[in-house]
Amino acid sequence: MHIIKVKGKAKIPDYIQLRDDDFVLIAYFRADRPLKKLEKYGLEGKEEALKAVIDQLPFGKIQPLNI
Image 1 (cartoon, rainbow, N blue to C red):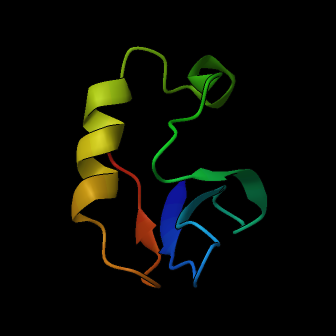
Image 2: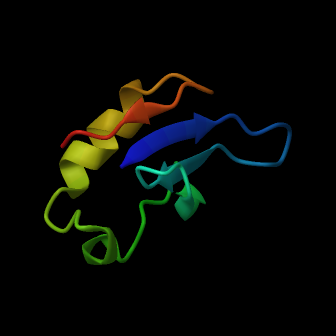
Image 3: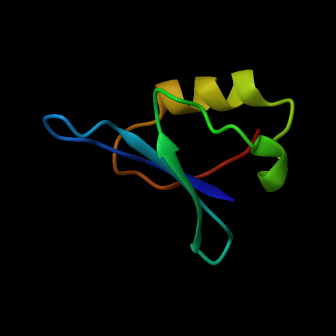
């Protein structure tokens, strides 16, 4: 799974994209509002780790999500 942070402009907030190994979009959510159904993506119980990754993630750089 890969993660990318997209910078918003003006009234549009920053967003997070989660992509599978083929880079197909599987989740898209606001950076300031964590995704509700993390178990659907195999990330249940990893909310704090995901928030830490999102906070340090640079804008526009796709990276493997290893948590």
